[in-house]
Image (cartoon, rainbow, N blue to C red; front, side):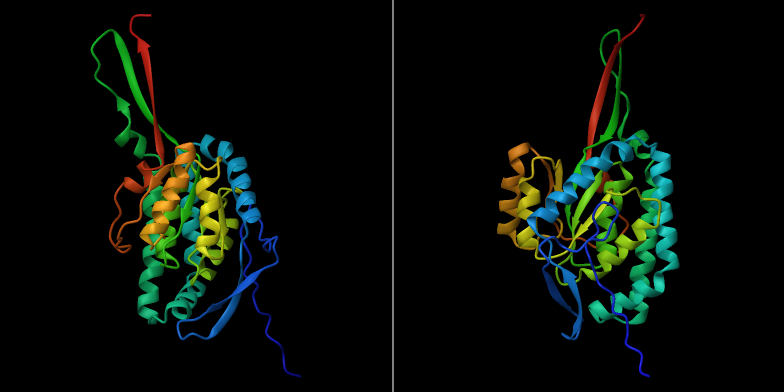
Length: 285
């Protein structure tokens, strides 16, 4: 008797669970040769709202953890990704049509990127914060704090680009709602499976799949989103419109720019989504 393959259903990743879109919609995802590969959920406005609610609910607990503990969790993501590297390499080869060697390079870089940000999580405060010299009988200290809920419009790079925009957001104590690359969404959902089994609390990372132009405007205008990363927006006019929508509640905005994902990152992706708290205290009391 011929056995029928059990095909994987690629759902959304919201609040630590993997629901279908509330709209019931999906869209076909093709491989690098233009052949049908799988169906991915087509997220709706309601799904985006649910993702923001989940991210906000998770924020207090995640930001309240020590930076050292957040680094441990991000490092655990790297460990689990390492154990599933064969699956990610296969998905990259199918999605982008690249060689096995190139896929291995991207997976290696993604794992190393997670370790890099994990190491910075408890050291960044010493670099961007500290005691400030002031004139007068005062002590003045500044310390970075996470901004809040960050909407991330992921770049086309199915794994390395995605990891490079998500890791700095969560390592610094923020929570995020990610809109995956529309042509390459499946690896993002597989990464969600890694997050779900890596001690990342439910709601810290939420992944939506579907057309960016349908989902992004609702996140840009959402009053409970504190910042938005436009890295994955390729159309300058679309980026401008999203930035205008984000101004309604003074969101922090990271504008899209050319990126070399294989290059060693700077600190800007972490500091872009941090607020500086400064405390003045009189001396001698």
